[in-house]
Length: 140
Image 1 (cartoon, one colour):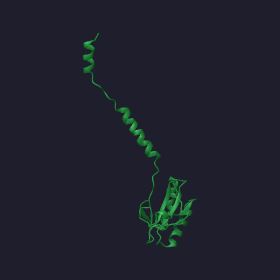
Image 2: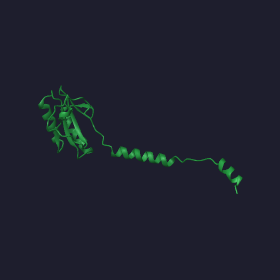
Image 3: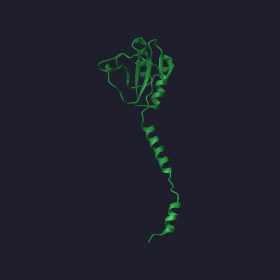
Image 4: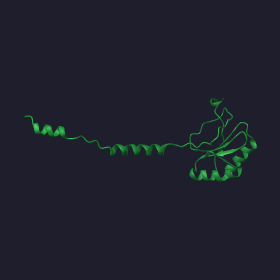
């Protein structure tokens, strides 16, 4: 038999949707993606890199030092002096001890500046210092 009173109570009952688990899940996903994302630190300037047939792409987090065509040195999107390269690389290596230092020099920059920057990076304690070159497919 149909219970009329029970069916009327069921119609008057409001349906609740608990949002707390959904919000918790969204925050957990956000934290997961922030922790697992590798942030790329750019030099802060546009550099016309020379290409090399033997160039390989490095996927690990790297410490980038940029040299423009007018021999200005950039690191972490700010210009630094040649005397400050060592201290900046030491600080970056303290944050990421396994990071490789890549000196990205413009094709029109002087070789002497690039050599001095690489020397300062080695003096800062960097074990892996290399000169950045563009892949042949990146040639302009």
